[in-house]
Amino acid sequence: MAAVALSLAPFYGSAYAATPQAPIPPGAAWWKEAVVYQVYPRSFNDTNGDGIGDLNGITAKLDYLKTLGVDVIWLSPHFDSPNADNGYDIRDYRKVMAEFGSMDDFDRMLAEMKKRGMRLIIDLVVNHSSDEHQWFVESRKSKDNPYRDYYIWRDGKDGGAPNNYPSFFGGSAWEKDEATGQYYLHYFARKQPDLNWENPKVRNEVYDTMRFWLDKGVSGFRMDVIPFISKQNGLSDLPADKLAHPEFVYANGPRVHEYLQEMNREVLSRYDTMTVGEAFGVTFEQAPLFTDARRKELNMIFHFDIVRLDRDGWRKKDWMLPQLKAAYAQIDRTGGTHGWNTSFLSNHDNPRAVSHFGDDSPEWRAVSAKALATMMLTQRGTPFLYQGDELGMTNYPFRGIEDYNDVEVKGQWHDFVESGKVPAEEYLSHLRQTSRDNARTPMQWSAAPNGGFTSGKPWLAVNPNYTRINAASQVEDAGSVYHHYRRLMEVRRQTPALIHGEFRDLDPANPKVFAYTRTLDDKRYLVLINFTRETVVYGLPEGLKIAATVLDNGAAQQPVQPGAASVSLQPWQATIYEL
Ligand code: TEU
Ligand code: CA
Image 1 (tube, rainbow, N blue to C red):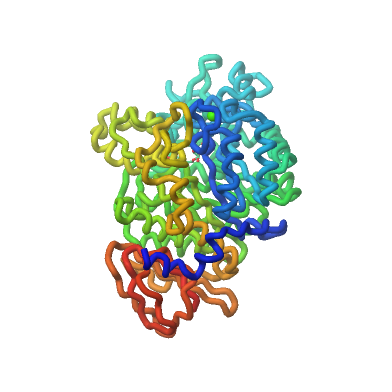
Image 2: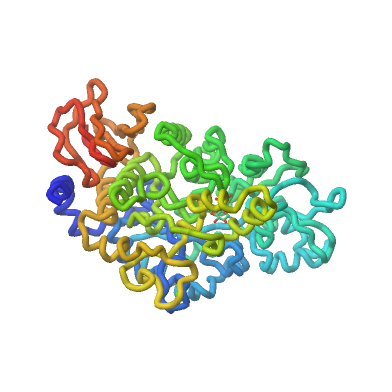
């Protein structure tokens, strides 16, 4: 305990008292300086006992987020939806999902955020809508319906689908519709038909929707699978080697940049916004096409290269630290001088950060979660923190297939297990580690029943470790994961070099330690992170001298002497030094 107090010393005094930060002023770069917190509303906080999180539940927790140091909230879809994919299938883009509350609740939530100097970005899900959207209800009625061209309809070929495109949620990406005998395209579930962006009416509908929410006061959008909006000319069959990862074809339609530039011209440039594109299927080489500010498209994108480092679809693979570092270095390069990046380790589609990249055993969970926090918040990119990761929440102890809720799992179970291609046990052993449901279990607010998330029956089971891992106990404990995140955000806010400074990996091949500098003008910082359970003596590269410790994650045993040539890094130690 003494060691913890000592290592926290530099920021313990002022930071624990939690001086609320001043709001970031409007202007070109507020979104570079901001820390974003993703709320998955269904699992955040339920205030009416129906087992589903709601907007009032978010409003009730704004002080918690403010104290943590959050500047911007990204709200996963809050729109009217039949929930085939938990809101990523939108029935009405201008209506609030009934389970989440009303438009009045939304307006109040937004006003309360503004009162606290926080901004809100919402999820723009416009590659597809719900099949229950009025546009699709009309579109499927007849070939000459005025809405027919809002979606992508084709005749079948040789008695089957128009081409061999697979859906991410299992089976073909085409569904035959009885009314006309034609097929419609759906990259995701059958209940998520793809919109036809070639139709200018569709684009204008989307822009109108964006204006509707911007005029209400939201500050921008996270754009769901936005590179997929332009479809390949001719929609020909995928070659065999592209079938396993169709995203690299789906993301490369010929008109995607034209559409994004039009969207920017028509809408985004007229407001003070931030935009982040979910860039599934976009390579490092292509990334600047989306984010180079001179092109006027998006501010930043989510690269998948870190969260999918050790993945092949639902399969989990081994990973090594140098691979992770290489991904960081490449991502940083794609940002370049004119672009900007994101920094994230988890979201509602990925397993929990600490279970994925840290060590979620009881002994190492907290310290490794803090080490990952240090890494995530000292990259050159806007950090996106996923709800619950600030507590070091872990993956769920899934047993059988019946424990899962995700539409993706149901499709895969059918395609791989029921088809006899993969034994159930093999699929399940990977799924336990890779399932999206790991991140979707309810927030663990306290040690009360259901982690204080609901007084009713939660829509998805709460992780039984809520009695040990919860917000109430961590807010009280200065040495918690929560307070480490809070201190990191405060340090980041006060240290321009950690936001804008040049990133340099000092030792890309080191399998145990991630060592990098962040440099801005004459200010230089060193970050050292030990990714192992062992003590590692790390010799500093020639010429580097530590001037002071800025913040460590509670693992350090003794302060480093100024001028020291090496540091004895404790297991999972992560420290920011000033050079
Ligand atoms: O996800 C896009 C996406 O392609 C993957 O992350 C996907 O979830 C899957 O894991 C691929 O195998 C976005 C949303 O974030 C996700 O929640 C939605 O299900 C999807 O789009 C459809 O809207
Ligand atoms: Ca509720």
